[in-house]
Image (cartoon, rainbow, N blue to C red; front, side, top):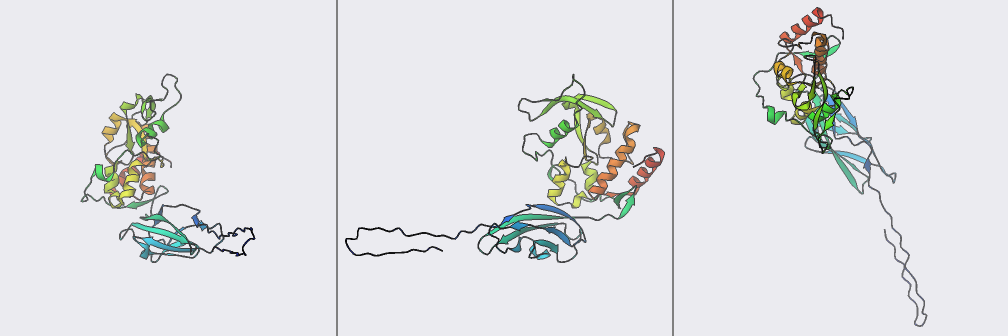
Length: 306
């Protein structure tokens, strides 16, 4: 609110006065935790708590918008919950926006909620889903699972991020050598655990999805929302998912599961199967009966322990 004080004087006074000015300002609320996406198990009602604050100490009000607000409620403390227990098979991606206002100004941020399938079977301490593959669903590698992304915008795509992460820095004759612009890996030293071989030229090295994209697709990834398919194909945060191997072993492995292919390097077979189960468990991908039988046989015959 602005106040003006006006003073009128008689002629000849010669005096002057300035009108004093006062203004009330308002600070807009802001988000404390900037969450743009979250994964939630199916049948779970609790989603996330959005925290917001206001420098003026104003009382804040929360509301939801976007495409799917009718599925959710949000409390006066920013607690978001499903109105009903959600089912993965009915809908597994929700797009909403969270709005916070102090009754003067409002701020909003988008939130994507990904629903995850719940697996309740146990296999060697891993929670898994036993289910046959879906062989009727169309597989479009280029459109559904494009690689390689540059998540952090540093010009090194995720292939080269893996090459850098898995370079073995113990050989002065084979240091890690990047291109002049630091965007690409030219040479270094990498170990292929599948064939028990070393490689020194990046052109001889391929980045293998331990659970191949086609295998993942027919094991349940076909039902992933497009954003989750993209993330699965490029995920460098989950260590077991992507590894650097030789082109020869990667070609022989193809999209086979452990009932059809295991590494030539027998010393690595147990670790390979453990990685396989960890990936299938983490991303809620199913194991079919042949796959299950093969893993059980490998575990016994190789005296695995994990």
